[in-house]
Amino acid sequence: MLRSGEDYLASLRDGRQVYVGGRLVEDVVRYPGFAGGARTIARLFDLSASDPSLSYVEPETGEKTNVNFLRPRSVENLAARRQLHTAWANVSNGLFGRSPDHVAAMVTGMACRPEVTGSTRFSDNLVNYWRYIRDNDLYLSFAVLPPAGSKSGKSGSVQNAMRVVGTDRDGVTVRGFKTLATGGALCDEILVGNAQPLRSGDEAVAVSFGIRANHPGVRILARKPYAAQAVSRIDDPLADFDETDAALYFDDVHLPWDRVFVLDDPRASYGLFVDTPGHTLGNAQAHIRLLVKMRFMLAAAKRLGDALEFTGNPAVQGVFGGLAARVKMLEAGVVAQEAHPESWPNGYVSQDRQFMYATSNWSMEYFPEFAKEIQIMLASHAFQQPADVSAFDDEYTRSLFLELNRTEDFDSALEKYRLIRLMWNLVGSELASRNQQYELFYAGPPHVTRTRMWDFFDWGSAEARVEDFLAQDTTTPPTRPSEQT
Image (cartoon, rainbow, N blue to C red):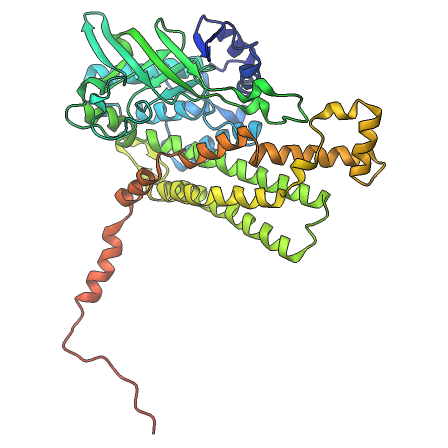
């Protein structure tokens, strides 16, 4: 099924328990902090429903289905998935990080190798859950980490981390906190699990499941929504792309058995991500989305430079050339992942993990520098502007604005103002700070991202060259050039 944006918005009025500070938000569709994000997600569903290239016919049902749920078996399937990720990222210019194609891609990858759960019963649950979200075209968030400050030692020893507190014939009861549910206030379903390794002794927290956002006992504790402070579309042009983040509290939540994928198994709970194509398909979306974002940031900076008349300077052109090179390097990583597909059991394929994790490392290292260069070019222009567009409503302050811009052409001055506001929202505002922090940890902490490259780099082929060299005959002295007289 391909649902419409209207269907999605209607589904959000389901009694979910979302808190902003001490306030319980009764209607997330109307609340100013979430309304813009909800509209953006609705646009994604409308796009897929109207563009035939973003759907496929699911063999199991014979129905048109969102490409995001296509389990890939070929390079062509990977290309179709990339087309969807690109089209959806374009809606938010890459600023909606955990859009509905991120976590659903992970579950789709997990459903390619469900035997990782270690149990026929749980494997069936996982595949049936994939079918459920597929056939209803659902938006998933995920919460796959313990609370902040609890990442050292055994996760099971962290008292406020979500854990199993009981089982019965009908299901499992869990209690405690899980993070970080980006989009948690606006999603349909939440995937709960463990995206970091667990140890022996962590059995109580080694549980994975899918749950409705409005399930009884689920409390969604949202961070400060920046969109709630938006003044106008000109002053806050990115407000509709504030996707929200949330900590989740499970208040003795009872899960039916058919929603449980792993129980009391530290290896399997982590393995759902790393021993299936799940992590790879999810990160492919992340890289494609970041590529769209970097292109947009670069083009916006270029437009501002043109408006302020400094892109004719050769030194400035050199800076832009360096930024453009970084965009193309990220694109090269995306292309390389897809061009060398990795085979999995059951006939499925994914992007190559060597190139995947190399791209994750590259993004982590160089995106902050990319954003910093653009911030430097913005200089103090953001601080020389009126407080907001109300300055244009008063005849006197409007005249001062024109004099500040040394022009009588209001449209030209307003265009500069809009570009400066856009750049500030991209690299200097509170929302921009959140987004840059998010990019730093999108694939996990830096040491984890680097360790994945250690795990998947082809050390054998590289070291074979060294071995061959060292095995050469060492009894023959090296040839020396003749001495010149």
